[in-house]
Amino acid sequence: MTLKDIDKKTYRSRLNLVIVGFIITLAILAIAFGAILIALFTDPLAVDNISLSSISTAIESGGDSSNFKYNFLGVILALLACAAILQQLKNKPFFNEIYYIWQLKQIQNTIYRRLKKIKKASLDADDNALIVLKYYYASLKQLYILDDNTITLSTLEADISKLDQLITDFGKEIHVDQFTQAMLSSYK
View (spheres, rainbow, N blue to C red):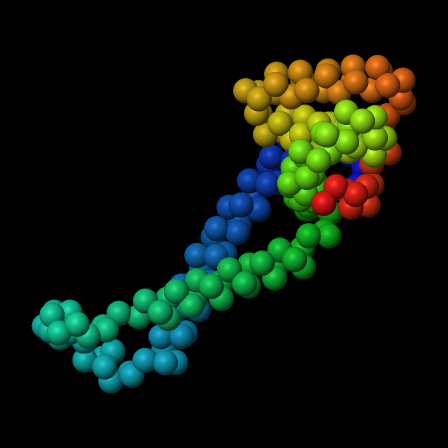
């Protein structure tokens, strides 16, 4: 996956809209699914005849007077529905930046899990390890800038400088666009 230039303002505004939309949709669907499940699976006479005294009696006797399990199932169904909606929308132009960043974070997680082996191989002048590290650091820098993570940016800059010096010492020509995900298979 090649790194793309992302407009920070567009990315942040679209991400915020998606987050707000997701939360609102999740809440509405959870309530709707919960209400439908309660209507389908509870005794309608018991629901109509609920009074304060019957609730306190049920609580004192240890009876189950709540519809927690139906509401919980409603939340799970709402989550599944929202995930399906996002899955359908991910390739729409509005989601380009958001989906790209999501994919980038998936790759970063894979690299991070193998980082110890990759760093060790890079010290042995392994071209693939050097390319993966170059890509990893460049993608981290992009994400840190997009997320305004300036606290760890200086540490990352130092790591990038060390890697660039290592590449220079080995006399290699390494570029970020040389990276492919297949390179990660060597470092399991």
